[in-house]
Image (tube, rainbow, N blue to C red; front, side, top):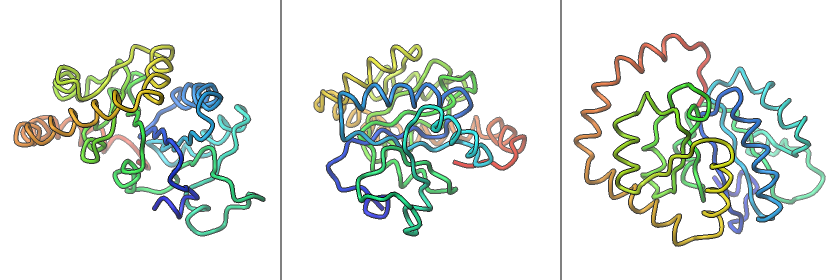
Length: 217
């Protein structure tokens, strides 16, 4: 998958999964600051709802950040005049976020800076990724709380805290790998309990899912 996205294996990749309105502006702003410190940083941005792609592209346009849609890169339709790595990759397909997480250096779980309630923080842990999320994780409260207590994820209070943590973790490979390993160990240790928790909250999540139209990633 990396090669089809124009990645060369030398980049550091920040993945923002299942983002919502208001979060992309923050992430694009932070990305621009972080790229000044980490020139080979790539942002993979995966909005939760695909019908918002135009809205997210407008955020990128206003932020003066070059981007490419995933499908354009995968099909060779990307019209960039050079062969450099795209700065921002906008995920415009459904059902691929789990595989995309495998590419990440750091993973931010969306719906958590905005008061949405967060999304599944466990998927990136299959790949031992360092996971961060915002203060609004009430849809996954028990799981996120246990992850934090185990040192297997990092919760930030807002934009400034997210910037501070991303800056630190991009520099400190040992720290971010430690978070990823502890998260993966938590996932393995509590697999049965995690499954039971999901069964308990599934009716609520299913109700939310049915209320959403055109859900994307």
